Image 1 (cartoon, rainbow, N blue to C red):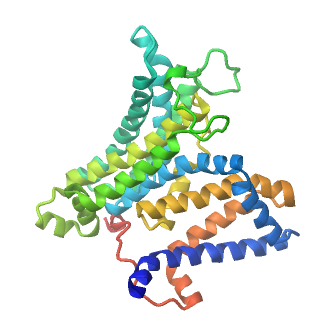
Image 2: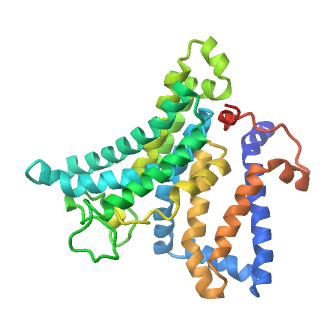
Image 3: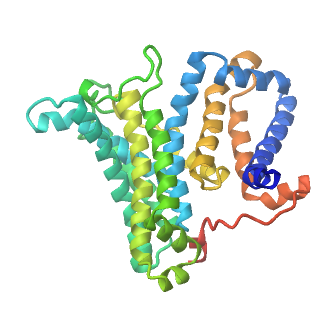
Length: 365
């Protein structure tokens, strides 16, 4: 029983030590800024979990983090590095805005919420999935590196969205300085989970997506193909896996998760697409996936950690006058220590084999 418990907790040890080390160094920065680390972190916890409304806001932040983190994690499990979640998320949000406002007018009448909400989220997933399938196809057919292609496609997507928000899809009632679409119809809006709070049904949907990704990876033949293609493409081909197709589909599913994240933000919170609404969810997702070891459950925990930091940072700054930028530094340090896990092992003299998960076989071509 003891050995089983150790094996169960061992994957959590290094991420926990990485977070602890980053928090200690963050405390040093707070001292240098003239603050008290204990007071600052107490304010952070109060802002994240100190009241029902604070918890609600933390879970609101967690929703896009979970979905975008799952997007990057799924690609990792297939040996792919999807840097394009930010662009895929933006396109998913734009598609949701189109579905929420223009689609009912296109079909000549209103749509029932039971149809309109799923359709809005589905179109968001479709937009993100198709956009991510492009670098998957480039890698499968031409050997192009997905890191380069997803980074470049980020610029294309974000600038295309900017053009549309300032042009054909711009709200006619908005001033020249506002880049946004018109409000989506009521029938396209994801409802609140708790009345009077911003927490919405997108959060349980994100948890359901995490469970579904875990089930697919562990319990289905396609999940086996993803994992095998990620760990050893040659062995996968020998086992009869069509690696090229698996790469394309994996990237498409990865992009679909990011697209849903953007669609939910539009449908549940903003009710329109506004330029810059994402606040870097797609880029933070890389750190979340790494901290969670590309495991769906670990990704959820990492997303909750990052969302608590984001949600509680404002309260911390209000109580202690410590700049909110300290949180960004701590998040960057977490990513550094997760990536440099050998350093963490040496600091704490942790013994054990390195994780067998191959995150980015794509680095080798």
